[in-house]
Image (cartoon, rainbow, N blue to C red; front, side, top):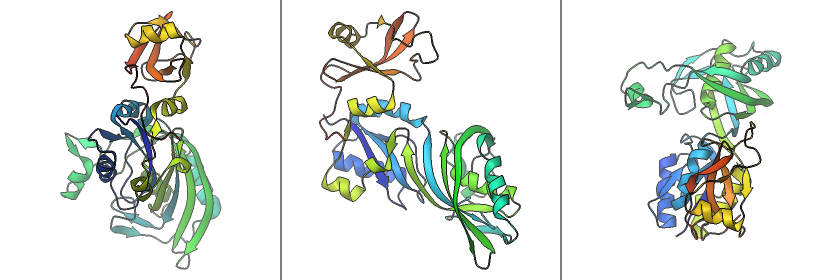
Length: 309
């Protein structure tokens, strides 16, 4: 059975669900999932899991993400991006480069961010965007996120300076909304703002260099098999033949070298355990002097049959 990760370069205009549907047909299986959505307007890295590799996706969702984006200052939209109608315009001609730099600095590091009202967050069981589209005013609660890097590459003054386009790179924690970052930068500068372009270049250890377009994947289904995927994603632990046998039956073994330290493997951040053959055997969490399996991959199924990258 084919199991592994597929790193897709998502095309503009496609939902993440659209890409999953396409991959189900390409891989010939219903068991396909993704590790975090991209808005239809966005392009770039979308990590998909096939068959047994869907069990790795939960550990990918929480990793940091990196994006390149263009923020337009001087226009506010209902969706905080270019797909929504413009609701307000204010000239950005008086906004200086130094003011933009100060606004970016204020939004770097740990911040409280209010997600876009047209996000997929559920409010009383219904998606926020569905409530907005039905005419309801939705106000979501702020949530803590971390902006590890918010770097300005260029500032372009358009239409006589009425609007300003700012090209940026953002590296951020999981759960960050880049269009909300654009909105907040514009609001902080007093002119409003929205996102006009977004490309995700990295999800955890998986980069755009590894990504393939859907057209390329239709010609050759390039799959990152599970052992390679887990080695890049998690701390590694090499098992002896005896330990491999014990873990394969769900039994505990001696704790890893990081036990009792901040580097200890946990259920939320486990270590990937490999047999002497290099096959992924299990995900382990340290508990006292022992390590116990969080997930066990049955012998012979720890890797997929696809092409490794």
